[in-house]
Length: 153
Image (tube, rainbow, N blue to C red; front, side, top):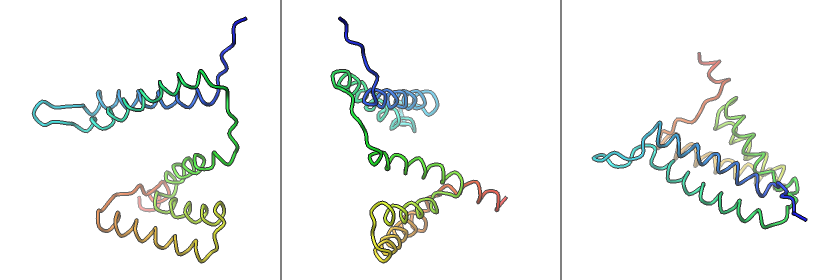
């Protein structure tokens, strides 16, 4: 009898990452350029290198996953992934700084179960570093969000 191949998350995740890696490589070469003979690396250099490494690692992970049995992933293991998706969605709506601030408070209070004193202390330190280093010192233009754009425009 022939053994049927079971498609598991251990196979699907590397396949998804391989697709993302191919997109990085294609956009890096086609849209941004890779290397100029006199100027050196162009803006597509890093995406192509990172995409190539991701692609190689994904292929290796796919090969390894074919040899293993499926694994169950408890819901708690998905919290960081869900948090990342929620940050990306809330960044589109309310902006990056408010969404990260809300995420820090919710994560420390709800998931880590710290006291309000510790949560607020860590929040003030993190926001002080982000605002001081990135906003005021380096002038990083964080995304403002749809609501901000509606109010300002």
